[in-house]
Image: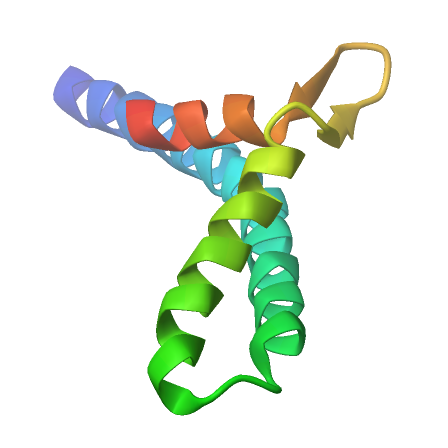
Length: 92
């Protein structure tokens, strides 16, 4: 019977850890979507040959410029930059 309590405890802990990690994914997805929209708008007038390469460059430039910008804040606790949130995801 004690084994069930331990299993339930670890299930709750793993669920909380998973939710916290998912909580960090949402702001990075928002920034990455904005980067794609920016790159798409910036490269829409180019030929198809140049468009793919230019798209990748513009997207990378946007994400690089956002790496030190605050994109997520937990009130009274901590603010996160895009780069910190990406690091959290990689740690997962």
